[in-house]
Length: 475
Image (tube, rainbow, N blue to C red; front, side, top):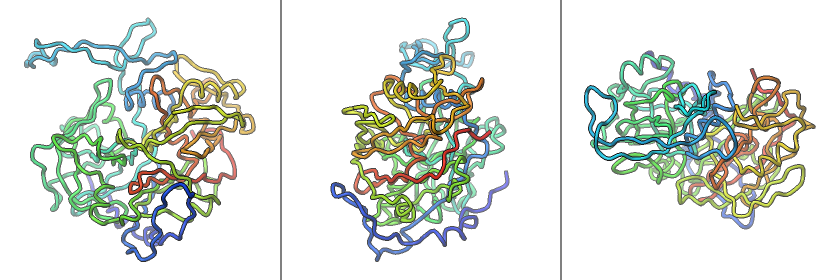
């Protein structure tokens, strides 16, 4: 497979214009603010543009099924997908059988799909899609091999397609860039280390580990752990990404026997970004915003807050304390509003997840939102709330959700996520099932400029201005 142009070559001209020192931002009195020290070296600042996944086609039900895998929850509303139980043997494998024989049996919770005859069956790769709307180019190795990775604040592994995959898998992934460690002069194998990401249906990605230089927007992280895929289940093979770069906290990294530092943790430890600016930010653009001043573009920054975004919002940054005890960017979200009516959600929290397209909230809030939309309904077969495709922006409710102590608006255009057929659109806000916390994915994040402040363990945001609302999803 031919190597793509180096990320350093491709982004050099744009980065020169992006690495400007931020000015001082106003911050709320109650929260610590990131440093705006103007004496820091310019090399501490990195911006990397977000690419829209050219092969991504929004599908509401498939995105919801992917989240059932990722967060392993059980739906509370009627539909074909549900969690069941399967008895498995834990004995020895024999050549004549693909399954273990003998030994102890265990009962495992698995995601299943009920067919038209009411019989439970397996969930296949066709039932889901890896929820990757946005990609970023990252260079791995010396010389750098460019891969397009999913930047995911809901996980903590940096893994990639690699030449260690079976030839049968690599032949299916001709559209992928495949990292070849033998072509990197700085790659070092980590003896005895392995990794595995697995989901409730048994789908998984796994392999071994090495260290190498990783180039993120011109910033080179030396000796970063890179998890090389040796096995990929079909759900990953059919995905359009070359791997994933996790932005959650390192406590949920899957490398065994010893978890490894995430790229951001290494940026901080190596002084690639200053301790005073130990943070990254995300602006997720939208194809619906082609007529906005920013043309729907997006980016990540590492080591600084883009002050142009703060000025454009006309607001102070609002910060919320992060509970990272489970490894996630989890904050309080104790209320919401629908058309100005406050919904008390005392004790509720949410995870800020750039690797998820939908927003998942409790059933009461879901119902309140869709009850306020003329003609909206819950569809059992698609396992989600639908709204009429003829809906106009003025017919959609004003919806806000709390992030810490401040309410942030969900853009009306993001309440309409994807075409659902038969004159309906799949809603961007859906049920979180039996989870006790929300997931705020792109449906919420596209409406804000997000600041993931690692050093102060807090999440900051400002509302992004929108001049118009485009309800119809792109074809």
